[in-house]
Amino acid sequence: MDWYRLRHTIGLCLRPSAMKRAEYLKKHHVFHNVGDNCMVMFRKVPLYPELISFGNNVWIASDVLFVTHDVIHHMLNYKLSAAEFPENVGCIDIKDNVFIGSNTTILPDVQIGPDTVVAAGSVVNRSLPGNGVYGGVPAKYICSLDDLMNKRRAEPKISLDHSGSGLSEAAARAVWNRFNSKEK
Image 1 (cartoon, one colour):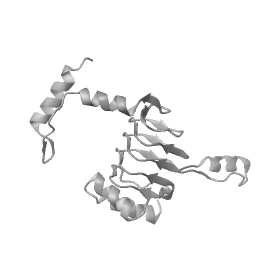
Image 2: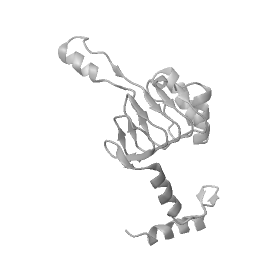
Image 3: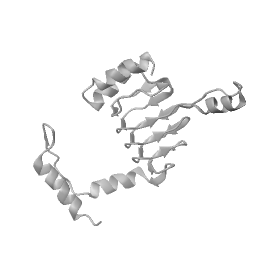
Image 4: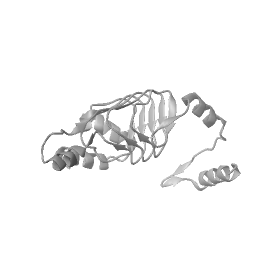
C-alpha cells in the first residue's frame, strides 16, 4: 500500500462514525467525487480511488470492495515473456440515492444508476440502470425501489431505543418477537 492510501486509511480508522468517514473522504478529495449526505462503513482506501465517484445520499455498508483494476496483464505478459498487455483499469460511478449492501464487489467500468439498492453479497460486473433493487452473482434486477419501500412500510414499526452500547433490552426483545412471528 502506498503512503497516500495508508495515510487516508489511518484517517478513516480514526473517524468515529460512517458519516464522519464520508466527510473526511470529501474534505481530503480522496475519491473523484463524494457528494453530500454520504455514509461509508469501509476503512480501507482502495487502489486508484480517483477512479471512484459517489453522488449525493450514497450509503455504503461494511466490507464493500471497489475493484478499479485487474492484474491479469502480469500473468499474460509473463506467459509471453513480453510487455504486450497493459494494466486494465476502469471507473466506478455511483449516482445519487444509492445503498450498497455488505460484502458487495463492484468491478471496473460500472455505473450504478440513481435510486438503487444493491443487495448484500452481490457482484456488480455491469452497469445497473437505476430505480430498482439488484442482487446476486452477478447482480440482477429484483424489484423496483417503490416495491421495496412499500414492503418496508408494511412491516410492523419497532422503536429502536439505543443504549450506550447498542440496542436497549426492550428494543432487542421487540425485534426478536417480530422475527419469531414471521412465517419461516
